[in-house]
Length: 476
Image (tube, rainbow, N blue to C red; front, side):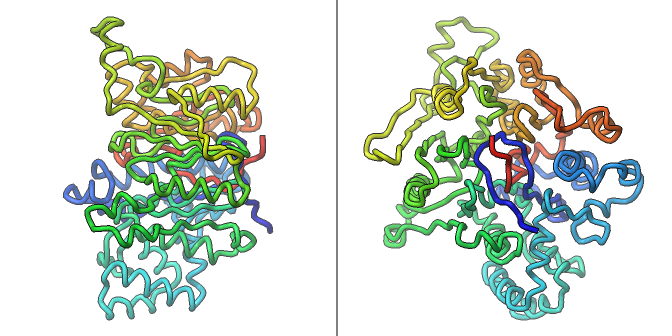
C-alpha cells in the first residue's frame, strides 16, 4: 500500500498522522527533574492514559480509520487497555493513526539498524558497555519500549525517559511531500530526534520519500564561536514553530525553542527547493509562557483563527481599568516581530505590525476568503483568563477538518468565545456514543469545538496540535 505524504494546509481534512501513546516514562517524571524534562508538573500516568489520551485515540480512529473501532466501542471500554498498548498483540495498529513506538519496533527487526541504534543511544546516554551488550538480547518490541521509556524489560531505569515523545508535532513537520526533521534546543529531546531520524530514513512507510527528508545542520560559524556566543548561532528547531498555511506559504516561529539561524536556513531551503513562494518569520518573546508559535495561535477555518490577544491589534480587557490605562499597559517584552520573505525578491521583505494583520492577509490573499476574517481570543480576551487559558493550550488546537477542532475542556472562557462565534460545543464523552451509533457522521460535522478532558495532559504544557504530526491532509 502506498502511504501518501502530503500537507498543504493547517485545516484540510486529516487523513493520516503520527502519534505516541503515553508510556511508562511519563510516570517516572519527578519534581526535581520536571522542568529539565520540559514538564511543568508531574502527571498521574493512569489518569492521563485512561481518562484523557484514550479519548483522543478513539476520536482519531472514528475520523480517520473507523473500521478499527466502529462496533467495538463497548468491548474496548470493558476490557483491559491492550487495545491502546503499542507492544500488545491486541493493539489497534492503524496505518492512519500511526503509532511511533511500533514503527520503531518494526525497524529494529533489522539487525544492522538495531546495532546502529543501540550504539547511538548508548553513546548519547553514557551507558556502560555491559548494558549496551544486554540490549542486543531484547526483542524488537522490548527494545523499542526501552528506548522510549528508559526502562529495561526487568523494570530497571537504564537512562532518562523521553516524556515529550507524546508531542509528535515537534519531531518533524510535513511540508507538502517533504519532511523537515527537528533539531531540539533542549538536551531532554536529543534521543527523540535520534529515534525519529531512524524511523523516517528506514521505515518502509517513508521509503518513497527518502529524498524528500530535510535535515538542518549547524552553521560552521557556531563551531568556531566562543562558548558564551555559541548559543546565538546554533541551529535549533521544533515542529511547533512551523505551519503550512497554504500550498505556497510557510510560517516559521523564532521562539524559546527555534533559533533565528534555523529560520533563515529553512527560508533558504524552501526557496531553493521551490517548495514555497513566501516564508513568514514570526519572532515571539523567548518565554516559557509561549514556547512555540502554535501556543499563541492556530487556524480553525479559512477565515477563523484562535489566538492570544497580547499579539492582537486589540488590548486585553482588564476588569478594573479604563481604555486609556489598557493602551498604556502594552508591555515591551510582549511585542512580536513579523517579517515576510518572498522568493522573487528576498532582499525586500514585507513587515506586519501585528499577528492579526498577518493572519488576515493569509485568509484574504492566500486562501481567497471573501468573508470577514474572524478571531476567537484566548480567555475571551479578558485578563486574567487570557493568560491562564493560553497556559493550558487554549490556542493550541488541532483541526480534524476545516471548522472541526479539538481543545481542552478546562478553558471555559475560550469555549464561551467559540460558542458566541457560532460554533457547536460537544464534549468527547457525548460525541463518541453518537459516532458509534451513526447519529453523527464525521463527514457531515461542521463548525464544532470538541472538548477533551485535560486535568493531567495540560500539566505537560501541550495541546492536541502538539500531540499530532499530520502526514496527510486532503488538499483544499
